[in-house]
Image 1 (cartoon, helix red, strand yellow):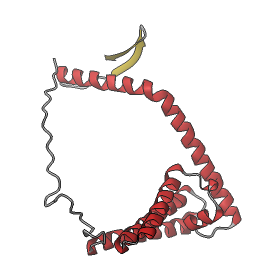
Image 2 (spheres, one colour):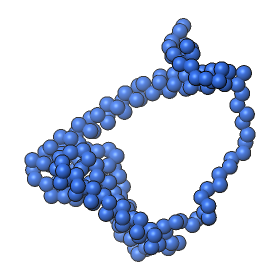
Image 3 (spheres, helix red, strand yellow):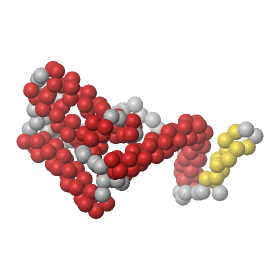
Image 4 (cartoon, helix red, strand yellow):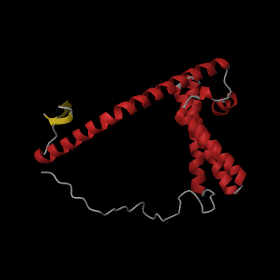
Length: 198
């Protein structure tokens, strides 16, 4: 029978030369090192050029453009937060943190249509009213689909996870005993989850 030999040891060697509390792209006072400035400025530049390419090829009313602009908005706000931390101005740090939280909320929850016109203009730039209507429709559809998916997962998750884990365990036992993978079939028998290998 297959047996898992558990050892209480935890081994992690990290990255070669890594030291506790020392960041690769950041000095102790919060300012960026030359490598950090290069890395983070290139991230913003990459996103800007990607947004320009998408706009040139497909226009502004598509998913790729909207998601790229949201990522760019987050990258810009991260840069502003780093600058505020470097200046050590408490008020600007709080404002930058709030702006970054807002940018992350917009990206994760979608639904730009729910925000003010000025917030939409700040993220997507100046768009015509027709483009704005199309983008709002796209965002509403995304938000509705996200809600549906969340509801479906909240209902199906408690059922699917035990089924999948039972199938994986059975498959592992079969492999250890026979040296090859079988094809597990999952089902219910007498009110219990049954996993069989064919």
